[in-house]
Every structure is written in structure tokens, then in C-alpha cells.
Length: 118
Image 1 (spheres, rainbow, N blue to C red):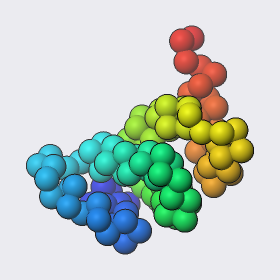
Image 2: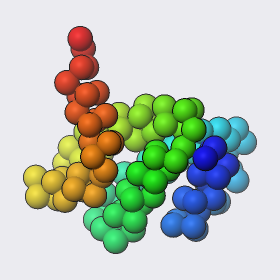
Image 3: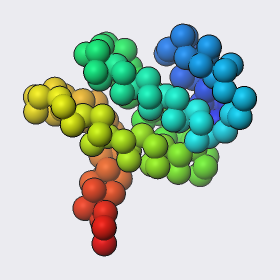
């Protein structure tokens, strides 16, 4: 899957996101994943659990089926922002969010966190 296919899959889950992509002239794997990550951050803040959990599932699918550039974009945008996105959540809500993230992405998250600064 490339970024255009990923953008279409994301649009199926969040139809409103299409207007944000139209405003962004340069579209590539990183810009698509950054926009999707920003939407997920807003869902976390607004406690929109239903759409959040669908979006996290879609992020996992895109990671699993994405090309190398898309996977790198997810690791460098979504995974990298998880701590910041969940910093002000209750511990229970944070655990619930992480329970909806695949084991693969959780491993990458743990690796990123524990290797930071080494």
C-alpha cells in the first residue's frame, strides 16, 4: 500500500479529513500520516473513543500493509507522538488506548522510548 491508497482508507474512516488534504499541496506518506496522527490526537483529547478505536485499527492495518516509506512515516509521526498525545490522559484511558494498538506498533513504541537518548 502506498500513501495514496492509505489516504483513501483513512478517508473511509474519517470522511472529513479529505478537506484537510485538499488544503495541503504537498502530499506524501509523511504528510498523510501527520494529518492522520493530528486527527487521532484530537480524538484522544475529545474522548471520541468510537472513532479513535476505529482509527487506531486503521493505523495498524496501514502499518501492516504499507510500503517501507509509509511504515517509516508511521514510526516517525504516530509512534513518536504517542507519549505527547496521551500525556494528560488518566492512566485507565491511556491503557485503553494502548490496548487498541497492535502488538507490532507497541513493540516499536517501547523500542523508541527505551532507546531514546542512547
